[in-house]
Length: 157
Image 1 (cartoon, rainbow, N blue to C red):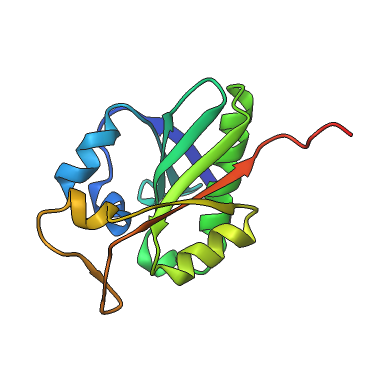
Image 2 (image 1 turned 60 degrees about the vertical axis):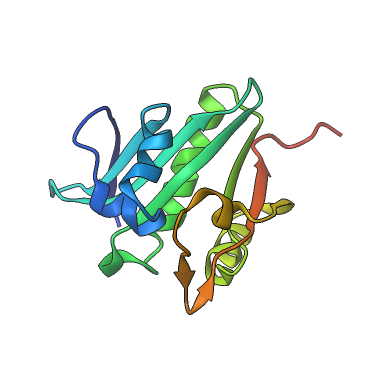
């Protein structure tokens, strides 16, 4: 699908952002420190995807949120958004890109691994520590966050 991906600084698509994060308050904790990119079909004004990139240090940028409208999921758009995030991060000089997802989010973890990410850490009790009320996904309470990373440059041999 041909997408137009552009950076936005207002009119954030909270409907999409909420597909990947639980609350507007949670989103607002990182949104204003992030670069936010929205994907639309070439001939449409409706946002169908979003991702947020936040600077961690000179080498690392983090995907804080990535989401695709439900009716467009499993069509390759998520992979297109990831590829665009890699391109943007490389152009800005970052060496690696990281992200975190719930340890019980097997589908998400598989998707990220398929796109070149590897697990490198687990943040114990992340979801139980930061959210006041328990969050459930597929009937399982979210507790730990799995951290994944991807190198943006091939090592020199």
